[in-house]
Image 1 (cartoon, each protein chain N blue to C red):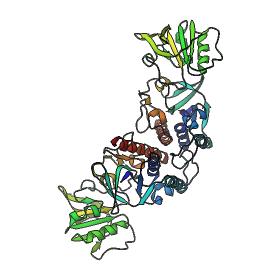
Image 2 (image 1 turned 120 degrees about the vertical axis):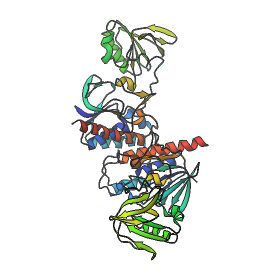
Image 3 (image 1 turned 90 degrees about the vertical axis):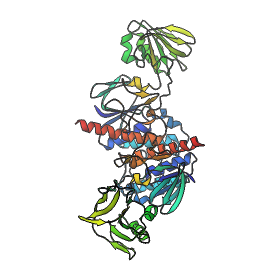
Image 4 (image 1 turned 30 degrees about the horizontal axis):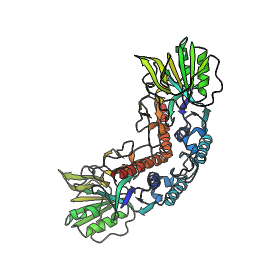
Length: 284
Length: 284
């Protein structure tokens, strides 16, 4: 059981981790590789005080080195679901499960725009995690929309459970689909439904009938990552201590809103870590 | 006229300045020398992401070098009063006056505790600035309480205006008082008053009668620095954009509350600068 589980691997996550270690908390970063950070691609960054004239990659490497030096653990993985267990959390890291007393969400800017109806039918036929929800669709018809090749693994997993699986890739090339999976082409426009259940998905003007739709996204929308998390538009709602509406859950960095800048992320990561540490200490 | 006047010279102020320059705003830092920052005395700082294992002095020097490199101006002075002129501000820097379209208050932790009654009689006989308010006490009796040798200059200035001036130093030695000024000894316990006016000050159990009390402090309480500024306890009240209750006035760093940490200050300085820049651009 970690004291603090940090979701994300950008500046906010790394700052939170360094500061959690300084408070003697055990901490693990769950996130994608460093080069997935928007900062990695930045040609030059000049507004993080004290470190002028670096490339984004150089800066991230210095950030990472600082965290490694302080004993931060890293599990490179895409996190699609976290479950609250009352007074701790279970983090599903590509089907390996880890426990943490508190969470810091530093999941970056949610670039997935979502399609019409997607949020309306969340939990009513729309899912972001085949492992979590696949069994609910035993013997039923599902469509998997994949933003990356992890969608293929999701579709293949569902193929063993569901009556039919259609796969709609939003990237090229598709490499590794089971024979049972039907390949679709085009782009999804809307989740279709009647009352409280999904009935299909609209692709290129055509309604494709199904009982469930799985989205394999580059970043999971925060409100589906953790049930009950309060958001406003694309942002996780936080107070000045970086606390979300859920006890023991904090957020930092781009996912809490503009400005999308390193110094803000680093500052919020610090504050979130101190708040999480104080939360743990108060429960002792 | 500067676009942005920054009050303070610590990490929040320097981060605000670097980011204001990046938005092409003219900016001047008004503050005491770098070695007045609490950070300067820190033996080792290890929780500002990317810059491990530095002394406070080394870190401040790197921060300062970054700001200088970006064309930030500096005026080393103690700021005791700022006046709002409607759509710009006048900054009184030891009796030199500068104008700015917007303000960022990065004045650090207010360590002056204040004595009983001090805040109750602010503007009703209690003042922090002899130059600003001295003429109101022409022919009257005043007491000056000095935390540092600048109090002597305040007392000497008032000696030319007031009927009597008593000086109560909270430091040693007192070097340069005019003959007309009476030297007191002890420590002030309470501001005394009747109704809406000061009547005296209690020193070592004794009531010393006077019409006005001037405090020359190491740091001016924010609510007396700028009229109408909203505070809560010792903190300046800000929203997530670091805006205070006064249009065009932002705050950042320790003066907005705990945690008193570099990363928080640097992050808030960035946010305050972007908010001030946006405020200026919106008025064009």
